[in-house]
Length: 103
Image 1: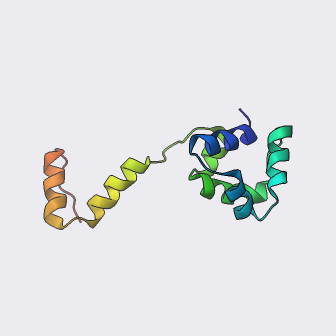
Image 2 (image 1 turned 135 degrees about the vertical axis):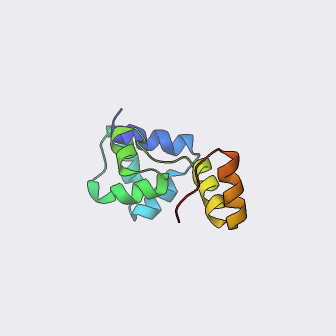
Image 3 (image 1 turned 90 degrees about the vertical axis):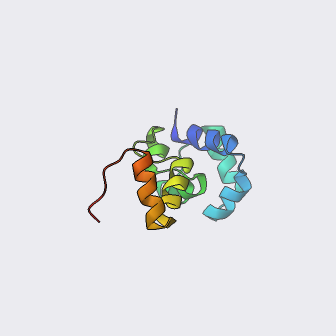
């Protein structure tokens, strides 16, 4: 799968709008249409903005593989743990049978 195909697959999968991506990239929507029609990869200068829009890493954009990226659910759990009171964190570690941390 090409980068271009991956971009449009993710737009569809995530129910995003190409018009919103075009606006974010500050380009005409017809440019996106041409990328799709011609299966042309976008210039690299747009890569970071495209990744931010799609909620993916550069690695995911290029290879289609997520590497060590965490899922949204994992991020939600980590954030909840970080924001929990120390007693809750300790109880969570005990429940998961994790060793106590030094910090």
